[in-house]
Image (cartoon, rainbow, N blue to C red):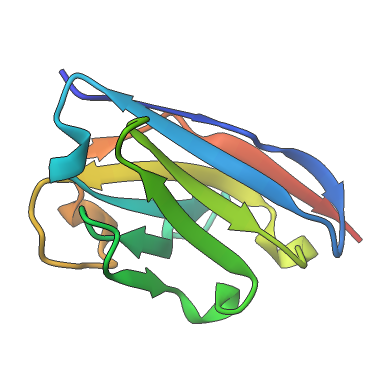
Length: 124
C-alpha cells in the first residue's frame, strides 16, 4: 500500500514563501514520477508541477513558472515544492501525487496515488 503524506502548508502574506514536503512509504520511491496539484472548492483539481523519477525532467504549470520549484530526494523518499512570491490566487489545498508510469501528464485522473492534502492560504 503506497502512502503519501504532505506537510508544510500554512498561512502567509502575499509575497511570502512556503516549502511543502511529501514523503512516501510502501513503494519504491525512485520508480515514481511525482507531482503536485492544487484544488480550490468549486474548481477542478489543477496541475502545479511534476518531476520524473530520476529528477531529470521537470514540468510546471504556467501560473507558477518562475515562482515555484519542485525537487526530490530519492534517499529520503521525499518530494518538495518550494513556493516563492506567493499570491492570493495560490490559496488552495495542495496535493502530492505519485505514479509508476513514466509518461508525463497533467491529467489528475492518470495519477494512481494521492496524499491527503495540505492547506495553503495566502493573505493579501
